[in-house]
Image (cartoon, rainbow, N blue to C red; front, side, top):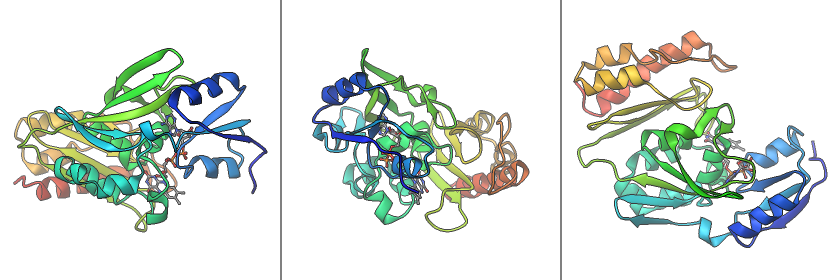
Length: 274
Ligand code: FAD
């Protein structure tokens, strides 16, 4: 199908993008277009105006600031994958981004687009949560930051208010002793996951599921068991404890719970747990 007619403008700055958003009746920000254009083509969405924010230089790039790595929201998945700061300090992100779709999509799609879209089966939102990221947002009411814990609200639902732009993702450097783990089950490489897991060990471990519920979700009971030094088998038995597991076209909720136990046990073993 073809999309409904729409106007297109390329924003020159974040302020320009927001001004155009406020002027329009019904606008959407366009990042890499890898999800938005498909939604338009299927006529799941029909805005009157697309505001292209992908060429705003201030929204791109990766740098170190104090004890954090800052990634501009319009940084493409492929750039994240190739960046030495990411490889050195955020190996979880480096490992996970290779599972996002296919190379062509990774060269257009952006980390910010992925997080703003909040597909519950996406890798980047889960990594943001596992790495305790802080999301920097600019909007008609000014700048604010939102912790990843508070950002994801439901299927394609976030804490972003109308007109707000996700500008940067701040990843605090993980503790030096922290190890990471990542795994997902997908029917074919590059497909969205049927069940996936991003994990950080350390003093405050984080076990985050994606493609399991309506948003990326922490396995808090299993995290507590990991922090308490429980065995791998005991932790894996708690994989989905307290989580609202939702079946989908790929797998029923019971199958997803089963996958989750297997993935958690496997990832903990790879992270060196007995
Ligand atoms: P766009 O499609 O341009 O935008 C998505 C939404 O976010 C829009 O509503 C837009 O208005 C909003 N938005 C974008 N950026 C911002 C911002 N900075 N501030 C506020 N709002 C913003 N993704 C995965 O995670 N895993 C996969 O396995 C996967 N497989 C895919 C397979 C296919 C065949 C395709 C086409 C896509 C797949 N994707 C997958 C999606 C891909 O990762 C996209 O890059 C991502 O979902 C959206 O990023 P984007 O930059 O293209 O955003």
